[in-house]
Length: 280
Image (cartoon, rainbow, N blue to C red; front, side, top):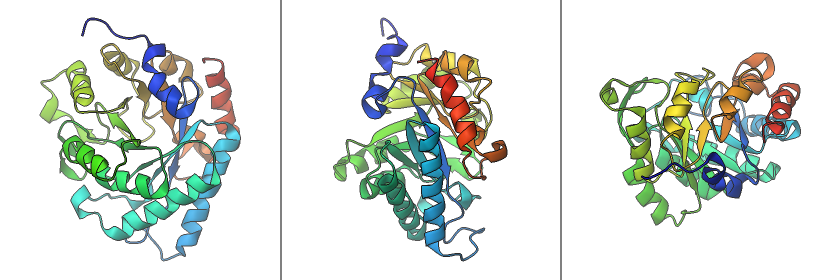
């Protein structure tokens, strides 16, 4: 690589997907789905209605996109252990959100079930997926997790779903980095790009944990593709983080009380989006 493109050039992929510079993606954290330990047997229609309500609140607050996650299924299974009941419910919930809003919608099937996410995206009409471990292996809460790129790209091609964009974490949260500790973040960034990630994500250590500016710079300094903040963006740190990144995925800070499992707060969302508008 002879030079690093400017952020405006890198952001073209995001501009094509979301229609704005520095897009903000609101996270819909689904309640426990059937089969999860904390699922209480309530009608699935209530789950889908909750997702749609959160989606509409986010859009009312001004976000540019949404991502649907089965966060309520914690503790998460490894990809090969996830049952069809989870994928079915996630697909219906995602389709309900897609049908309720006009902004682009994505999906993440936890934990790191990228093939499942692509299947849901194809079935539900979602535009993108997030992969927590795309190119490298990590020790996560679920155990040893391998990068999913090789199988996921072949699966995406088989489904004729090449229009589904892949957002990939470079230095993943909820995991130990010991396996790749002898490799720099710059090298991990190159790995994710070489393995076909369309958009890169810099993130904190856990859900809601602020992403370090140093990590964003380490990724964006060598990346040829857009870089998103993956966790921890707030009204207070948005100017600093978005000064380095091309956009962000936001959840906790836009929820009531700043807690990820609470309903979306339109007021909190608007407060952050007002700041973002001034940075575009």
